[in-house]
Length: 185
Image 1 (cartoon, rainbow, N blue to C red):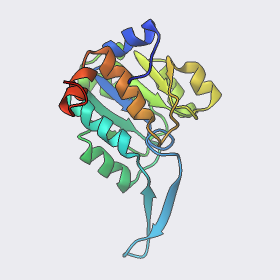
Image 2 (cartoon, rainbow, N blue to C red):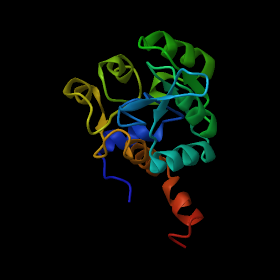
Image 3 (tube, rainbow, N blue to C red):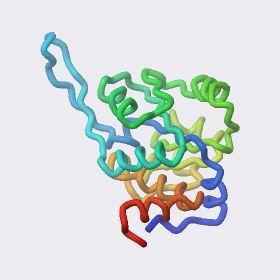
Image 4 (cartoon, rainbow, N blue to C red):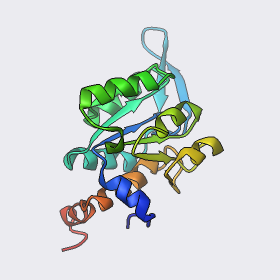
């Protein structure tokens, strides 16, 4: 069952056409590992949550675009974006406002049609500008204060899945997901 949300959050979620998110601390628990690669350098390994992964697939299948804006540049992140059909993949950017402006121009969407999931101070600037701002359960107190909705799930453990259920439910699409998997007739 999708989380019960306030009428204001539900109204905001009903308008969403694009879900943007941070990576480290949102799609992951914020930890990453450097392991040796065959060329003698280091490769960055990240752990992504499978429930967040299926949520990305549902967003794609229901016509809601997705994208990420990450401060770190990592092959693992690029692959997550590719395999999840993300429309936008910006890495190596801690200054996120210019990227958001670029996405607004490219997408033709208005800020109220965009959701953003964040966990740290670099995310707050976008959270104040979008239609639905979501802080993950272990976000900093300042970021939680900027959010319209705070997930019970922490980053890297289904926070995107929780936010996706809120959005799909508000748009009348959640029942279709349940029917697809024959959870309901």
